[in-house]
Image 1: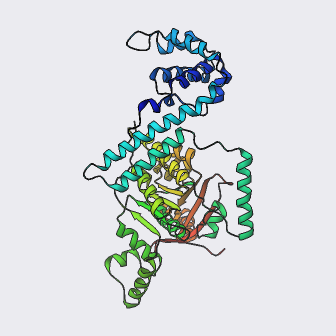
Image 2: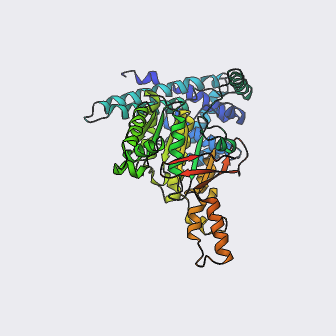
Image 3: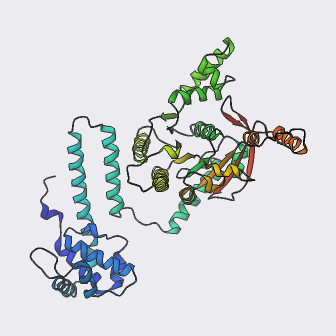
Length: 455
């Protein structure tokens, strides 16, 4: 860390590069994907390069006068002239045909400077009393990844290379019969949703009591058969989740488990279910008012320590962010964007549960649409798939006619009989296939599960 500062900069290389990109637009575009203003060590070089980038990306014709107008006539406290600097850069570039070969040199030196600063930051934080080592490791991992991304050390991949890799994976699936991703455990739901893959961001939307937590927990349990699952439960306590898990595996209701109201046979069932759950790979984080940044840190830690195939967040209205936002809509946009980053960066499926607006209940066709979801526009933008749940029998109760002896009352009774105990699941978005289809299931509320209906 005591490396000489002169070894961490190459002013001549920076000047050569700037001279070349000043000479022609084609020279700029040849390095634009790799070189950023922050890679230059001298502030004036950063300003010149950023001005050039802005001018070309705005589609304007570059001139020294235009650059000077953006930077100012003088660039330091000694009154050095911007025009003289630009002229010198152009003049020196005339005889430097290989100037653009210096780009990697400049980027590599920036990489070294950032690495040293990051390590010094980590050492300083590690010495502070009360520092949680796992949190610091997660922070350092993010900082290191940021250096990697911004130094473009990950090369671009051609479509041909990606196609070759994709076909290799497809051939492996064909020969082995092992398909990527995981299924839902409900064949009818698989028909309209397909398999859930690492990198997917999915949403389950419903009004309170219409089963979104039930389905979220059921999908988490199914995913855990393929790998570890992280469940962020922002609404309930961990004991509530455990009671639901026990009820799902037995004939004992959640309420009876909580009250201890069961006989000897039920007790044996519960003991057996408790034993089975000892091997569960669903891990619960029930801290209230979590920020999406804290969820990111926890997920990175778990990916590194246990592995991670799926993340469930229940639900997004309760997720905060450390970023300053103007309103609830902007906050949800930040949250869904953060979840999309998590899914892609950790190659894990992220399933977020969402409340829906009450407006849908006043429509003639009340099942939730995508724009009814809390933060609908950002969900529509970021989601790879979205499911809407609707328990029509609950809605029908609020529509019960006063006079049941009328034709309207008889029609209501027929509808109630038809839909009682059922839940409708609509596929509102599906990036890998057609959306808009619906399947219905039995909703066993006392056990907290969805079950297939014999067709």
